[in-house]
Image (cartoon, rainbow, N blue to C red; front, side, top):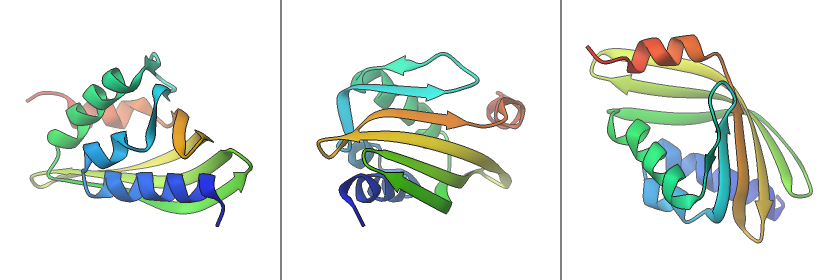
Length: 124
């Protein structure tokens, strides 16, 4: 397992533990996090803030890797990201692209259908 793959696997494990601090330790200071249906988030502080919004609002989170391909600094993941709040659950198919540099993720792009996310996280 090469360094980039290991970094991404550790990142997904941290997400599955809802451990934002552990996730942040694997992100570059100038990270660009882009959920493709939305505007990109630039920088570590802004990314951590967004991660807390999702992680802290859920009772359970899991980034389940179904498939992974790595070539140099680029790691592609086919995942099912699962979120639970009380008795409600969302299992979201996600295609993710991570760019690693020096043991940290410099770019993170996730491709998914936004509609179920908006419905699940909508207030009330």
